[in-house]
Length: 561
Image (cartoon, rainbow, N blue to C red; front, side, top):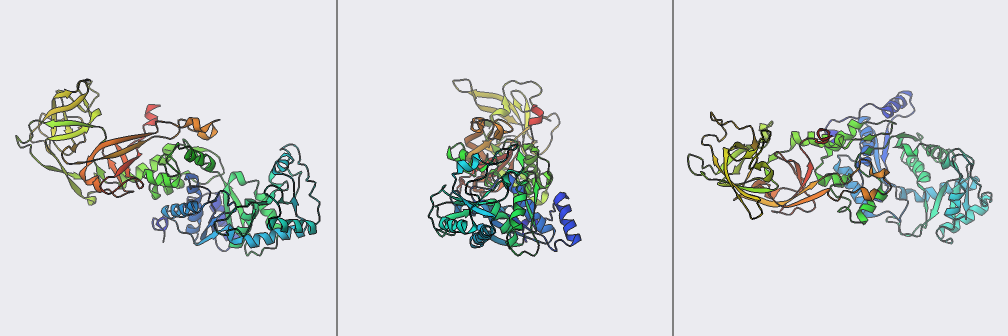
């Protein structure tokens, strides 16, 4: 049983579940079979997560099956690295496929169906160049121009197709086109290319083939072979459904239940890029640290950032399934992980920009404890507590001290008191500065009797966090903001120009509780008063963790607007 099944999640009602209900009730299908068919030419992103959750979720909810099928029909762009990353991401999201398939599994059968179309006079070998084919397709208001090779006999086309298969044509010198209608109002029906030449070694079939089928020809046949009942894609393939049906109408494939294609809106997310081409460009130009950069909304990037599978599944559940194109605010994704981690992440204290604080009266008046008890979660006593070392010298955040400040400043300032989290009330009495006038140390006095208790006359309004300067973990913490400066970078004329060079800030020597020294990669905490952080799965080492900011404690955008 998968994690998603164990969680009891169900897909909210939508137009696709209505179709399935009707199909089952009317007897058009007696089971539900879906598939997730990624092309292994890059890493999965948040848009794929929506498709994964829907296809696997439908199979789960209806007691059906869901195949993982790699659309590996273009060996020039595909790589085993991508195949392995896709399998890893789907499993991490909490799903398990019923069958692992590849379009290349069906290359022999696909070739046979192409021959069928040729013999019926429904496909022909075109020797025009790709540019000529493009230029003669016509426009939305003008019909296309028929190829001069369109009316060759089936016998001649079959011979030429065999020559393509045998490598007798160079790349771009011939292709196989379906013979449909060059005057169709739908561009995809104007004699689409269904086979092209690629002299490239395929990851699975090696050099057996030098001709490869196109997606629109492959997809519908693969669905039929696998017995897929509901083939779900995004709206940009809506017109292509006509070609999907045309191919199945004109080949002799035997299928118990003919597959049908249904389209939904794709996921458009603010401050995000989901085009694999553009993602690859970011990687190639070194603007990000690989496909798993925590600033990207790739599944692997979100995982390194500290997002949980449950939070991504919940995000996909909330945005739902419709035919209406829209753009989702990034805050919707962030709220899902914030809610998850608020409920489940243990707490810890971390000082990102340390300022030394000395308790001058430490060891007197009973202020000499060497550790304090801190709850691991304020609302979950079952998560237990921990002992955090405490001493004369502590670190606090630089921004938590001011020599002078107005009444709105609730933290530490000279002559005023503040409570140290889970410890004493302290009063700042003086500070030291360097030659540039920067405060380097704050001297204070602890109020006796205030350890975990209130004392009359000492009720400060502010609480700040701290760590023991003599017993803490010093490590790197990385703060992330949106990679792009604009909400819709994909619409920019030069999307690379919208990359924010300040989207990543490295803090080399943060001070954290000693307990975090052996943090396991991938584990998350709430750093009190800071945000939610994750031990980086890529750069953390035993005894030297690196922490990535997952999300702030609250969404500050609306407050700043």
